[in-house]
Amino acid sequence: MIENKTQPIANPRNKEPNPTVEDAYWREHYASRPYVRAGAAYDEYQPAYRFGWGGCSRYGELNWAQAEPRLHEDWRRAGGESRLAWDKASPAVRDAWARLHPDADYSSENI
Image (cartoon, rainbow, N blue to C red; front, side, top):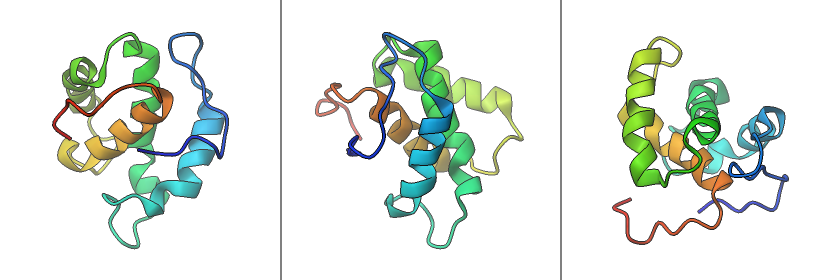
């Protein structure tokens, strides 16, 4: 789970995430994530992080298990915005989602 101490985060149940704050956070931390390919530029993963925090605006009332299929379909429809296929993008999407849902319990989900 991502630590949320570096930057303030938005609570998707109360207000919109702040894209400037989220982008700055992920730009600083993306390279430390286990799914990021060594030497990859932030720009490769930025669309996935944006999808995660943007998904909170659209589906913030849902848990990850409910939101993930919708986000997957949205990613498929968006096409072209990222070179990452969903299987490579989804860990970053989930990371950004989890950062905005710090109280969520993922222990019962297959991660």
